[in-house]
Image 1 (cartoon, rainbow, N blue to C red):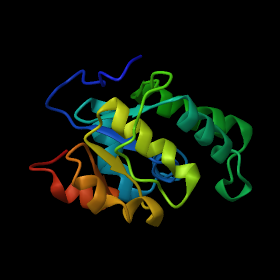
Image 2 (cartoon, rainbow, N blue to C red; image 1 turned 60 degrees about the vertical axis):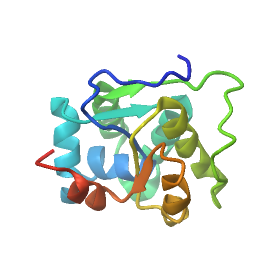
Image 3 (tube, rainbow, N blue to C red; image 1 turned 30 degrees about the vertical axis):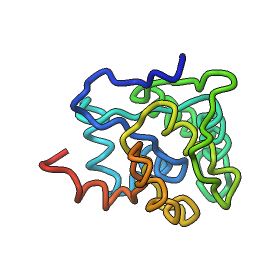
Amino acid sequence: MHDAGVRPNHTAPLLVLDTNVVLDWVAFGDARMQPIAAAIERGALHAVSDAACLQELRRALGYPQVKLDAAAQTLAYARYLAHVQRFEVAQGANGAQLPRCDDPDDQKFLELAWHARASHLLTRDHALLRLARELARTGRFSVLAPEVFLQSLPGPA
């Protein structure tokens, strides 16, 4: 896919979810993530991911602290894949206007949000949240904790 962005329903926000937020949804059933997960599952919100982010999720599902056996890992991954749109950043695409994240492993989420033209990157990661103001100045997407995102919606998600 190219840098034109993914917008199947122009009125629904397009979200990038970092790995821990996805784990809260598909592995832990965290109640704080339930309204967003339900909205994604019914199509009121859209989530986008790419190969690098999905690869990280696959690895994270197998971490001992996540405590999922192989079958549960497969089900959690399949649940996410069933509700996420795939996007691949074009080879050589430039995100030069993006700030650099202190954690290089998190840069992929910024790149994905930028190139997919997501409206929001949802995270609880402090390295990403510290960039929120700087990214807001680009006018391209917001970086928010899931709870803050929910508060920002005009009505029920």
